[in-house]
Amino acid sequence: MRRSGSPPAVFLVGFMGAGKTSVGRVLSRRLGWPFEDLDDRIQAREGRTIEEIFRNSGEAEFRRAENRALRALLTAPGSIPRIVALGGGAFAQPENAQLLARAAVPVVFLDGPAEELFRRCEQEGRERPLKGDAKQFRELYDRRRPAYLAASWRVDTSGKDVNTVAAEVACSLGLGSEQDS
Ligand code: S3P
Image 1 (tube, rainbow, N blue to C red):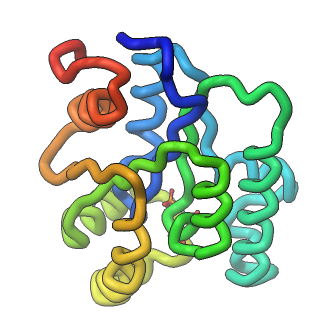
Image 2 (cartoon, rainbow, N blue to C red):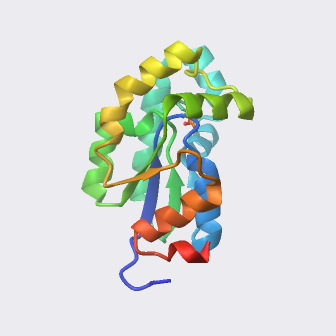
């Protein structure tokens, strides 16, 4: 594993069901870097769950909280190497994409076909305020995909398990080889 010249953080982005959190956790173990999920930070800062924020204050307020949490994370003192998973809509907000571009951190888009991502969300069973039915899911996916494609790296997750995807992310960033998964 190459340590010198390693990026200070790796940001994982992509649609719901892309595996950002699970891949992030595996990457964190592989690299020995702390992992952070931006949605957890939002919930801790706001003192309520993502579902409660959506239900009681609406999406616009959630996006403001998300942007505040991302700003706080990027300006936190002692920026140690870490893996950060963003919620599905975060990178599709231009102001968040700009913040990450300004911070010059590597952003990895975990890609996959809408049908497979929908299936994964159904299997997980976690409540996701914007998931909707298969048709709504696909429409939102189509609207957002061009934004995700602006990420510096894209890793295809289709048909792959979490360890394989984590190994590919590490390899793309020069942080390990695909064999040592
Ligand atoms: C969202 C995805 C969720 C969470 C929130 C909004 C979205 O995260 O941030 O419900 O806009 O796609 P996951 O991608 O982890 O489900």
